[in-house]
Length: 68
Image (tube, rainbow, N blue to C red; front, top):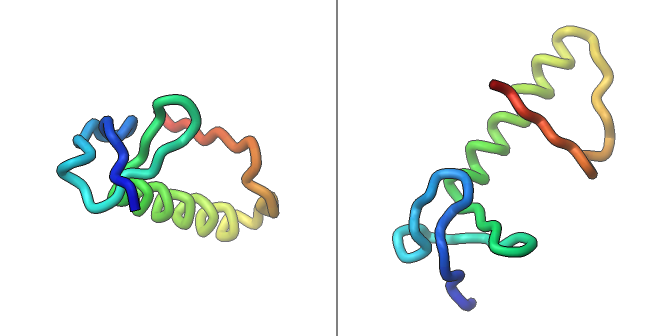
């Protein structure tokens, strides 16, 4: 597997310092650690929605979740 050049667009860590750097469109990259954080965050949001009795969308296509 070819190692990506660049750095994670989320945390800034360089490609040579991570186990896996996934390339997206253009020059966007995400490291495996940031993917893990995203997966955990999505699970938390889904659990909170279920606890509140909200229905969740079956598709995440086009989803933008921004918390400030």
